[in-house]
Amino acid sequence: MGSLTGNGVGLHVLRLCSVFEPAPAPGGSAVAGRAARFDPIGGMQNHTAALTRCLDALGHRQTVLTSRLAGPRRTDRLGRAAVVHRTGVATTRLRQLWALAALPRALAHPAGTPAIDVVHAHQGEDLATLVLARAAARRHRCPLVVTVHCSVGHTLAGRTLHVRLLRAVGGWIERTTLRRADAVVVLTERTAAALRADGVPAGRIAVVPSGFEPALFAAPDTGAGAEPARLRIGYVGRLAAQKRVDLLVTAFGRMTEDADLVVVGDGPERARVHRLVEQSPAADRIRTTGFVEHSAVPGVLASLDVLVLPSAYEEMGSVLTEAMAAGLPVVASDVGGIPEVVRHGETGLLVPPGDVAALAAALDRLVADPGLRDHLAAGARRRAADYSWPSLAARVAELYRRVRSGDVAQPTAA
Image (tube, rainbow, N blue to C red; front, side, top):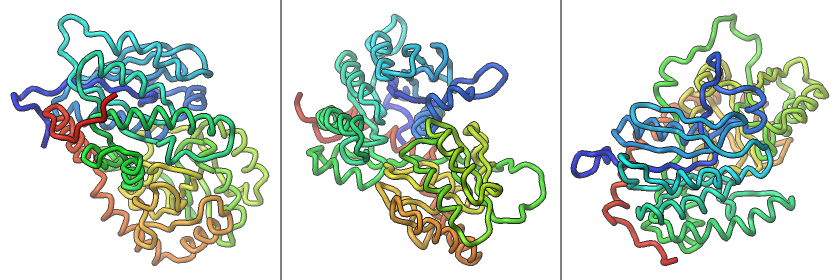
């Protein structure tokens, strides 16, 4: 399944990503609270780390270059053969400078180390990664693979000056890089169609979604305690403007059915979300927990009855696959790639983005109808089988083999 090359030797992959799973901190905590607010942990961090672990298990050597997470520069080993270098500058501003700090290592070929076979860039809203990846692929004379976690040209939404500049300048960088890449991985068919319309040959686009790690969900620790008196609605993820947790808090306050709300996560919207909770007519039934490590997420999901993802825009929403693995019905925005994961009436309910009344009504409907919850939960468990990380990683490994052998459409000349 693409684990090794034809001569039985694993590939050496240079993975470039602006964010990655945080390094263990002293005392065993994965990340300090300050770091979680500075760079809140989300789907892209979990995606890049899970893929790295699974490819390591398949026998591939990987060198990961990523940004520091509000902490010191450091190098760590991951698995049997992966090495993670965290770099950047000591500032919460001008975050793109991490790529400049990583450039010497991205271009280097230390004596005694195997040559780089594939450069794999992971693009979010940090477009410096693409510039770094193009330079690295040219230096190492090897294929370039790009995973699009958030297309600034087709998914990013908003009217602020920052967003408009990012769409204009970043959209050009994205478009020109993807046309020249040897392969482009997208999370949803929606983005694949948009990139084909942008001039990226269909033969170089592969749809490989984010997934869940089966080992984490084998036996989640839900903790001891009595069964809650009310159903528990939950949000798990970054507290960022994109995620619209403020809408969830507002909608929960308008519900007519009795339930509890648990908000799990941290980020730049933390203070605003907490103010809204304090002002909510249902404040006594809302609990905020702050950041939890990813290894604890299965237990959190197992303690919930409904998961909500009210995003304004979303490439896919990786927490949705984990919710399905936990057998949770979902209420989510009908936006971006979410409808490809959440099938309305089968695994969850979709509502128009930004519609507080529709969100409150969907939550009331699920709380009031245990039969519907059971139906959606069963559908979610069945659908989860398509999102196991080991099988998804094998598809990525096969893509590496294909680009190394030239078995893809040729990229557009620079």
